Image (cartoon, rainbow, N blue to C red; front, side):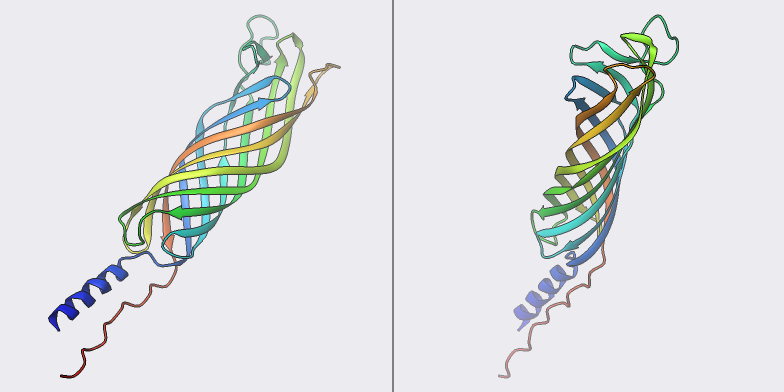
Length: 242
């Protein structure tokens, strides 16, 4: 009889400390590094910057969950160069002399993704690794103003947005902060296509569309909170009468 009571108490405590299934919300912030290369042989050097994400998810069981994620990845465009490493776009001033990198350039990526996540371990583990895959769209806004390195008298500029399909791979660690809260450390690798429509101040073959490949690495720290109802603790039936 005493053994049954102790076992019921232990099982009850384990269930009470487990993360509940159901809906959850999360916010993440951290660092990202983007790489943009055009199939016209031009590469955009994007400075590393901060990144932010908001997530709404649903946990089905101890291991599987899905989530909808919105992300924002800003960045300043530094140098624009060709595959050989030679500069392609220079700063607006001075119009002659050394080709300095642009000072007026931004590239911002806004993503909307659906993720499938697998959590290793059990719901009452204090630390749980997780992996996942995501699919969605990436909207990239590109804005810059400079001069062509081949002709400093010709302005080269863009103020354009494109939206393309995107995919990402996810990996991380979740640290339990009680029954409902988690601290998530998350790595994301995002890839998508994008396009930039560039203009020149004079007739020049450098104007037109620049289809490109967008790749991004991000590392964030986030807080996740479960809204689902906690399952009632298991209560062992009373022992049969003697």
